[in-house]
Amino acid sequence: MGGCEDFRKLSWIKWDIVCLERENGDLGVRRLKEFNLSLVGKWAWRVLEKRDNLWYKVLSAKHGEQGGRLCFGRV
Image: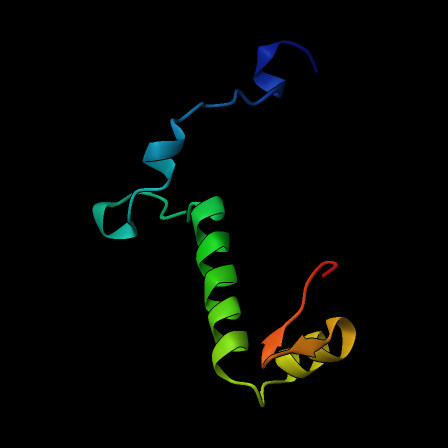
């Protein structure tokens, strides 16, 4: 056992290429920062629009509600 054959070499690829769509034969990895931001936005929209939502009830119980709006931070 010896020599370079025992080790695999890393092939560096630009992140922009890794994130290209699968239809083009690429890996189709999502851009995590943008994907996370869109999920947080969707979650926040649901919390604000549906007051019977469990998360709205949890946040309301924890932080309080004033004038029909959730309170965050100190007022």
